[in-house]
Amino acid sequence: MSAFYDNNVTDVGRLLLGDVQMGASFVPTKIVIGKGYLPQGKTTRTMTDVADVVKELALNKATKNPDGDAIFGAIFSNEDIQEAFYYRELGLYAKGVYYNQSGGVERETAEVLYSYGNAGENAELIPAYSTGSLICWFISAMIRR
Image (cartoon, rainbow, N blue to C red; front, top):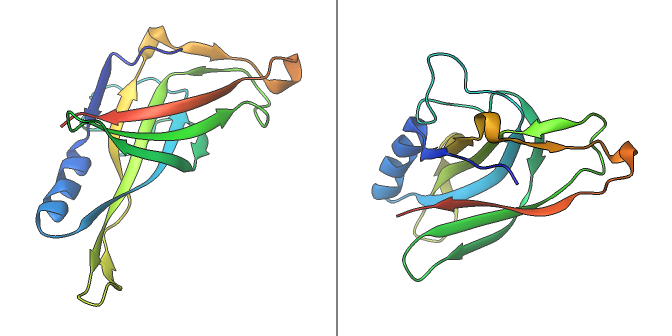
């Protein structure tokens, strides 16, 4: 599997944490995988979107480890992948939700790229489904406290 050497909470993710400190609930929305390299002049912290999106994945796991780290997960399959690609990017998107006293949604922040990692040359080649190679993985994004 790809080795993400530089995985960080992004600057826009840190702004979202400011909303959480002000009372919003942190709501992870999706995991996005991509094939792009880190654009020139950017760092994993300054990314605002996955550079070259291959697939958006619905979240199906959210757990907190005893040490406080949070893990968000989704299922990836290459069944709808028509062309081989290098699994190079991993992004977790999230938003903040403010609830009123009766539990209804008062307002939401914009969805942002909360954390981003790029494997660079350590990316793994994912074959197209038509090659007869079925890939099915559980993809996790871990957020360290």
